[in-house]
Image (cartoon, rainbow, N blue to C red; front, side, top):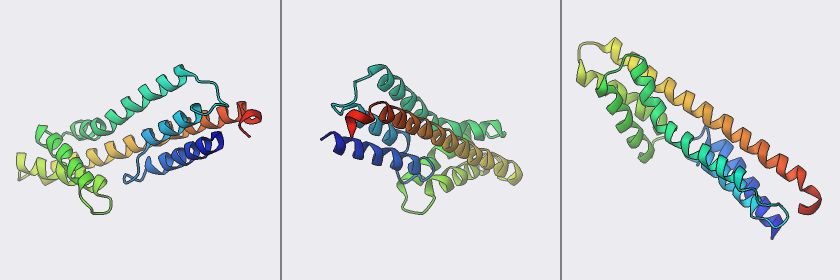
Length: 166
């Protein structure tokens, strides 16, 4: 049973790493489930501090995944229309079956939102949409980095309990 939980945990970690830059797959939350599965084995001693801290990090980063693109729009001079367009575009991009919808949605949403606010200033709309895109890329990078950190924790704990696990 321990080997099965370990294997499923490792698969979750790998899916999480790919999911950090492929929006179709779950990212950091999948990595956390992988850690949880590792700690559910009888071979590894439960460490609720590690699980609690990593869960808190997962929750905060997941919330930031939805906030950072909006902040990028605002930072690049977008109005509240652009921020709302980013958020609506993000939701539409997640729900739509088009490839890269989660990237295209916030960009187009910010652009359209800014055009609704000021239809004559295309340059400003493009700048705000670029801020949304850069915010998304920054969010993906943060997600990827924490997935790699979770992989490091997984490997460290596995190495620590290798004699009992295998």
